[in-house]
Length: 72
Image (cartoon, rainbow, N blue to C red; front, side):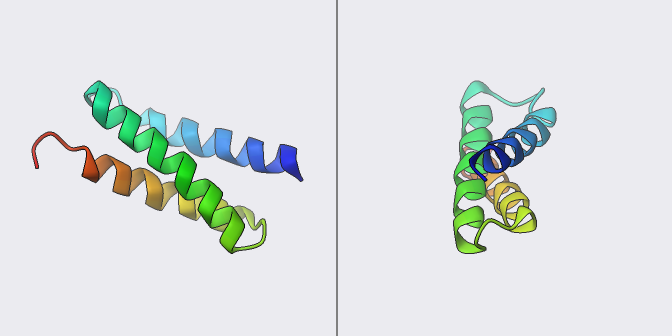
C-alpha cells in the first residue's frame, strides 16, 4: 500500500509540474508543495482512495499555486 501511495503522489507531482514552465521558483515550490500535502491529506481522508489522493493533490496544487502567485 505504501508503494501505491508513493506512486500516486509521484504521478500527481508530475502532473502539477507540467504547468510550471512559466512560473517563478517560489510559485513552483508552492504548487508542488501544495500538491504533495494535498495528496497526503486526500489519501488520509479517503482511506487510501486513488481518486481522493489525486483530487487532494490537484486541489492542493491549485491552492499552493494561487497562494504564491506574484501578481496577487
